[in-house]
Image (tube, rainbow, N blue to C red; front, side):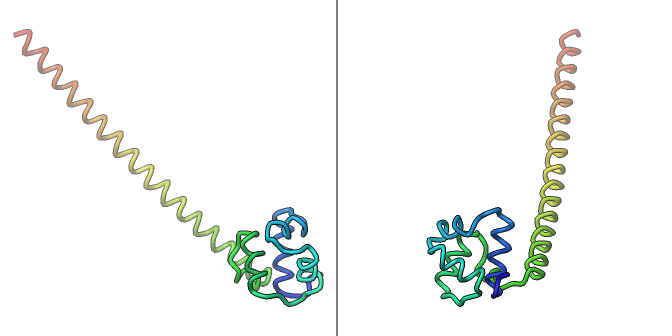
Length: 124
């Protein structure tokens, strides 16, 4: 069981990604026993080491100090923002496609009307 808040967060992210401590140690350029001391034994660490770990995990350093509950809240907020953004983009895309189709249809109809007018004039 992790003995520090960042140890718990690191363990959570490792589990989430399916990584071993050794894999994270390599990605973060830290010794594996340093990571073990952080995660399993709750040892203190310097900001530089925690920053490298956060960068390897592709999370903000502050996320290593959040509880699981806080991480869940943060994630749901991010997912909600992404969903809202996706919906807005899809609406905009749909509106744009509909406008372009209407414009092309109107252009085609004008072109057809002009061709009919020319054919009638040619028959006279």
